[in-house]
Length: 92
Image 1 (cartoon, helix red, strand yellow):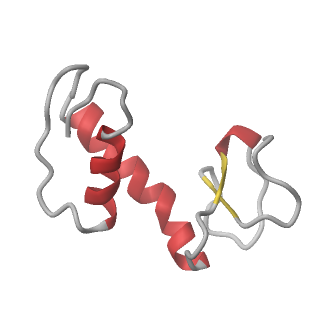
Image 2 (cartoon, rainbow, N blue to C red):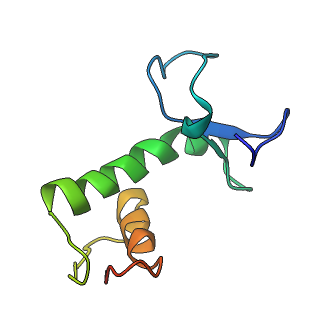
């Protein structure tokens, strides 16, 4: 993990997520965006994984295809839209 330093606010994805402290592999740790509460930061990985699951596993979205996201104002919908705007060939 090279993007975070000791004392940074981070969030992570891993087993034993419902504990106060745990160990996770460095690639599973992400800097928490400024302005988020700890509660929002804890929810962010779940919302992101849900958006990814819906688009690419259930929806089988492939490069060059388009997807319409309804209710994009919520956590999962807004992350699905952001995922499509990364310049990687997905049109959402």
